Length: 240
Image 1 (tube, rainbow, N blue to C red):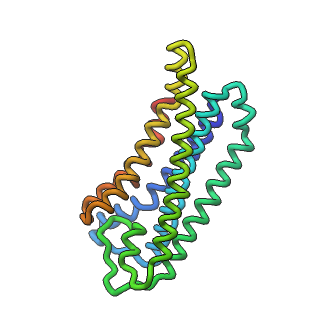
Image 2 (image 1 turned 120 degrees about the vertical axis):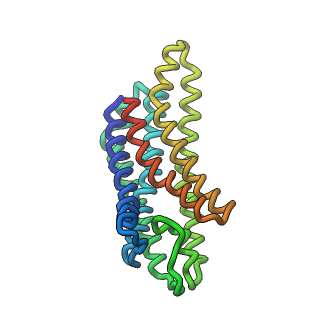
Image 3 (image 1 turned 90 degrees about the vertical axis):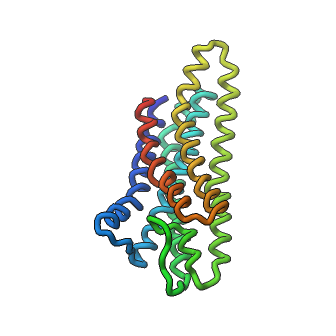
């Protein structure tokens, strides 16, 4: 039961390290040099890698929810369903989809023309902040953003909720209290990571929509881009 979980955990840890590395090193350099400047190419590159590993984090959490669903609801068929070929295929699809998404967003930003004032109240090149500086029409960019939020965030989150609703139904059918506790303990760490990831991510979007305070948006982004990826491997490691 643990081989696919450790395989997915290894990939999640790698993606989280890369996700943090896309923003934190530059932020630390800016603090050290007291210079809050980034080149145009550097900004586009940062957007590309931030989108890539952010989407990968989302997909991996969804795949791990499916893994726990199969392990608890179909334990006798677990090794048949979650074989190495399926795990590799799910990981490959996640990488391809995330790569195409990040390249699309980066190319669409590179096609924009910008005004003379090129300053954003943030510690990294956040896409929404960059779009506000554009002088050209950003309707297509906003359309792609909304569609990607539904397809790359809403659909995986719905899949996670469906998986855990089935898990809860299976756990309720277990006769012994010890069996219920054992089954629930195998997925409680993943639930913690999922709610931490989506609650902080949702907080970023809600804070940016509800308030125009750049400070509040930056603080919410720190939770989403720094704290959550750092806690993901820790939560799993302590649980294991």
